[in-house]
Length: 580
Image (cartoon, rainbow, N blue to C red; front, side, top):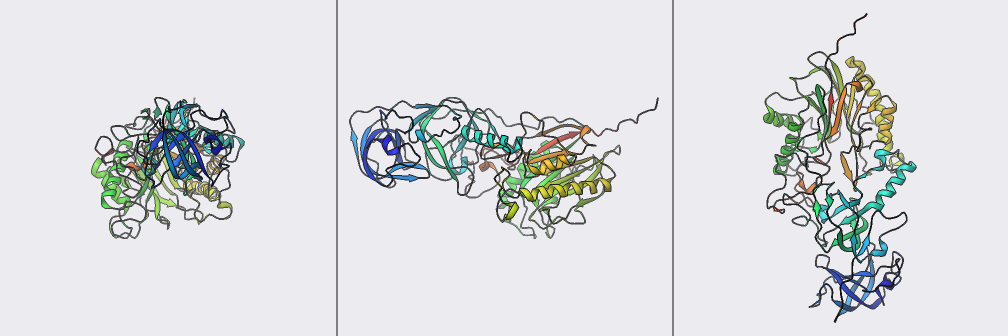
């Protein structure tokens, strides 16, 4: 039976479960996949059917003399696995004389609407489109890089309203641009991870310097659990990665007289919250992992050097009999930058909520004074109460900062309107919208208490730029300071798409004082295995390529999974107008 007939024109072989005799030329041997690929050298001339197929050996010994370019015949059973048509349980593999390796078939991405890569499954192919790394989340776990044709991809709801025709069209177009570059193995936690440069790096935004040549199959891709099946290229020639997105040494200049930052510190827990040690409920599993985490965060905060910093995902430990996490972080920062450089805004009278994590504010007492007490909003709708503090410059100019962390997009426990509505916002969109409405009420309270309408909303809203919570806040008079930036802003990557979850919105009274806003791309573009965790699936990069750790604790890179945000405010006192 010819291979194209076995593959058929559909996603499932018409001969599923049957034992057949077929043959072709071996195009690729991958011991890590426990099998090899074979292709009909002539094909059937039908572009709807693939000429190649994967032979799964499992524990069957590979025949001596089996090599790339060798012609074979075999008897095996047709099966489907994760969307891949394959031949299993080969009862016999016979080596034949002659045979030559077929030329790779050229593929250009993005695909046309309605087209798929199914007709190339199992074949030797050449991806001739320029490709960009858009995700490295699974590099350490599965040896995979997600690539896109034509550059980086934007999260549809970062640009268009949820559920809109434009958002749906962008989501569909994004899918047609994607391909996963795999490593020819099925092992988890490859050591070292593939595709790293001599310094152990590969960043989202890096590009491929030559066409990709390899065989195409299907298997688990993406960050879901269980992972969705998708098309993967196993290279038969080493890919040539160009490091097109060098690590930025510092944030872009934002101007102004004072700087405000927002930083998701990725579960900064310095103990169990009760005065005990490690492992912590959500953060570091060991003192060594915590030292790595703290060193990275301190290096980032030192370089950011903001006058006010809103912290997200720091341990909520009011009952800690030791040093609470917030004060531990301030102590470590001051040990690096000088005694008294930073201080923590005292906890509000209404408390910090009951969640394991909280938001917090730190500031430079030498640059700003506190005006009144901190305020929080304990309204039941708030997953983590927002925290507000009014500040005054030395000249007496006042403004208030409210740091937030809205309900996440994870679906655990979601019911009713909080379930995924299929509009691109994932779960708990209704809850986040209610939190946005409540935040507007709280902001009015903060303005009244501080005597100033200069309000800045910062933090992780768990909503992209055009999602409902952000639109509700802008409809309520706040200005999204990131909305008009081009290229589009991003602070987070998910399944190959980039958008900003970390926001800065200013009241109408404060907006004229904003001089610049930026995200510092030190985290989202970096592979997760470089972060602080020492857990299964997060391999250390010790021994990667150069034989040394890729990111020593003193560097800020992958200090979190979100990029920090920084903005500049011009708070210089302006002379009063003189009457003519």
